[in-house]
Length: 342
Ligand code: FAD
Image (cartoon, protein in one colour):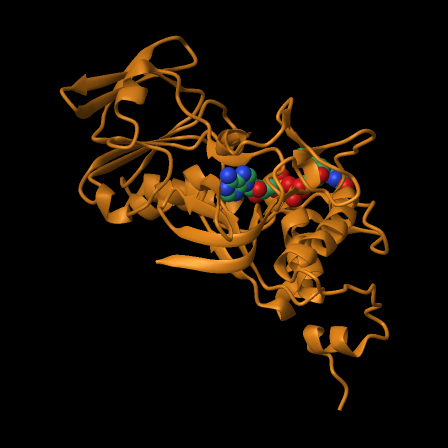
């Protein structure tokens, strides 16, 4: 089934979220897609608890705090969120653009807003050749279905929250669980480290620190073991059926490069009057775009979203005059914001 939409936003970072708001003020409802499972882009993925001091009118907020407020501000406009889906294809067709995600969800969009930041966040992969062969079968970079690990000998690599959370979650249902981290200290929450240590005390898990995976034992298309190089250069072989790797996420421009846009060193050239790209109907805002004097700041994306929304209105409702109205005084904007007075 194809989803019809007036505006499709690729990327739910701060720019994409504010694009929902600016389109909403002009009466345009949007669909928004992000490859991450939660909105927020770099703010929530890279620095949720760190302070931001340069958002106009907000002297201080955290990365997560800003995203929470942008979500609240966009709420009246009822955008549909499609999270955990990467947009892989955007093709011009009659009536707009045919857009497809990696889960084969399809859209017909009158306008497209690329708010892809520094690209979509992808799991950092292991470099071992055997890991590439077993990628998606027994070498896993995310848990889609926890039951896959029932009764299996599982090795988890990593020391952040994802590695620790999954080690704790899966240990009771796995045949064996070993968490291997290359350092002594864990980056993840103390409470989860304590929970894993408790499981270790009960014989349900093992924690190996200062160790790195240096080889995989493979039998046909099956994983049989993981070799761990320890601090003293000794190599220990852990028997394993499934390997879970959590080395963090890295942004990749990925499929955006294939959409016929004018790409300039991993960014998209735009016209600064409307933030339109070289393809009429496709706009690019936020960190992903490029123009003389561009500064990759959150406030730049906000300004760009406002101008792009006005330009898109002329495509969605051709021939209709668009007047600039103030949210302070405009009854139609109050209606759209759901703050109509009795
Ligand atoms: P992003 O935040 O990068 O979001 C883009 C989203 O698009 C991502 O969620 C990504 O998964 C998604 N995406 C990309 N491609 C696809 C695809 N094909 N399909 C689906 N989804 C896709 N800026 C400031 O102004 N002030 C600060 O104090 C500040 N501090 C910072 C501190 C750190 C540590 C870092 C790393 C950055 C900081 N920045 C700061 C920069 C700021 O975070 C960025 O300018 C801002 O996040 C850009 O927003 P965006 O929405 O354009 O892109």
